[in-house]
Length: 392
Image (cartoon, rainbow, N blue to C red):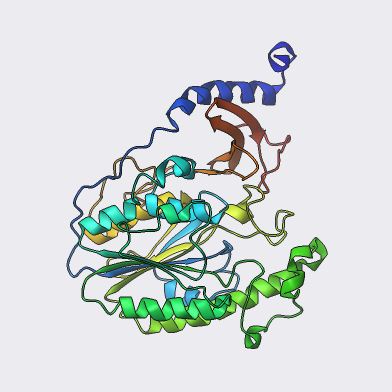
């Protein structure tokens, strides 16, 4: 009421106009459509598909020297250079990869509908496996990481030692990939999870903040905290390089990405799930393997785009997935825009950011009851920027 009665400035008028435009759409957010069960015809010989998800993988991991061996092995693949997980927390990031849908449908989807990746690849004759050194009894992840969507869901975290557990996951993955039947295998590795663990011999970058002191690290300790992350990444770089060396590149399609990004004080916060900043929501995404073009995509993309693009590679032509918010990025240039969102445990509302080109528009909303608040233009750290002229 105050805004409508006041002498509004440009930002006020912009927020009110956007709010009025978006509010009618809230009613449809809880409508969850079934998975698309169309048959997918994959070009023979069908390659194994291996999706490697590293916990808290910073968006510059392949360019800043954290993963030099992986950067070298993936340099000729399909690279998504401005890629967003679609969120800043693990369960929503994994959901978006597997379902090719926006994270905002998480609560109403996971217990009712199988992941679209599993449905599509089962229809193409694949077996599906999910291996992790983490946990799946977190934020309802066990409700979609289960049979019959996956033939195998294996949690290898019995020793409370992430580096050793990651090695166990990689050994198990090698065993599964010996199968004659084509495999879709997702691995979720944890060594780069806060507080970033690694074997003692990988303490190459010093000084470091001790693991038991990381929770109390300050911005003044950023370099030492980042060194700890770099050491954990170096460990995974060696393990993954050895893993890939044992796979025939003609028979394996490899995807590397993260469940979300990681701040380490880039945006003023320590880890992630604090704000929808560039540091927390961006992560690498690279694909290499049979029929994968050597190409760089520079427009904004999200995890929801992976599955439609992957199915295009496997089938040799576009696959139109019904009820997916993902885009097939091999169909040509796409709009430079993305939608990212998250829901914090302390709130029933969602935080979201609409990205178009260099612009970021912040919103807070709820579907039940429906309401929306347009926060205005944000900077890269997800803070309101009154100097940014609204140009969306």
